[in-house]
Image 1 (tube, rainbow, N blue to C red):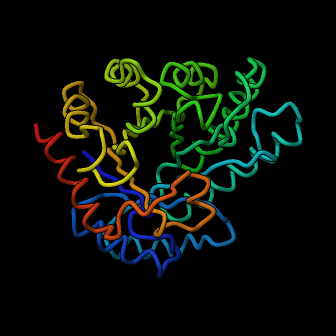
Image 2: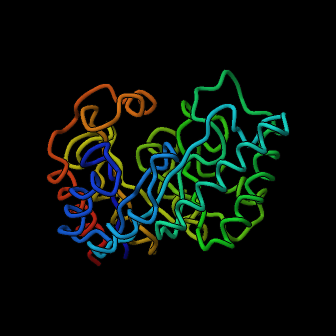
Length: 282
């Protein structure tokens, strides 16, 4: 069982120097990976980050997103091309820092849609993702598409849609990333959906109802972990938590993180590791 934690638990500085507390803290608790978001490419120093991770004997994972002018499902071919190029650049950065996986909402911009997504846009996004997946496979980087709730996307808002999208993409280098926070909003039978996704599930993320500490909120994350273990999940188990004071303001706004949920990231990281170990102990 490999474990992963989002660097934002400790703060918003993910430079080779700034990420040191996150890496040291994660390593001390036994995590295997730390997630580095690829938010502004010009700020990423892949070679230096690779050295920082190696020093703590950790491996990076990455997430990325798309803006509206880079929507890979857009009707405008130039917009789609910009999106594909953006994701290919992200793959190169991930590869160069030693990452084996890039996840997140890679299939379109995060936004609250005014209505259902047209089937043509779904197909265009799948076709574009096939091209990205081929590029990523050559780089040795796996694609893990995060399923998020219906207030953040009209595309992959539940596991069923995620599996349908994988079928449409038709590439062996594309997998799913499921998150308990999002699943608790849009899945009527979340454990059935985890089981259905198992052959394609690369990343299962434990995330509390308010996206704060594991020991607070309405989700029994230890029970989620136990059920996933009983179902036979053996991929990466990730965790994340967000507090406004530890995020860049624009990042907090994008995630709708309005409150300071916690101040001590190391305590939160420790609590999540307790949940993982109790849930997957068998």
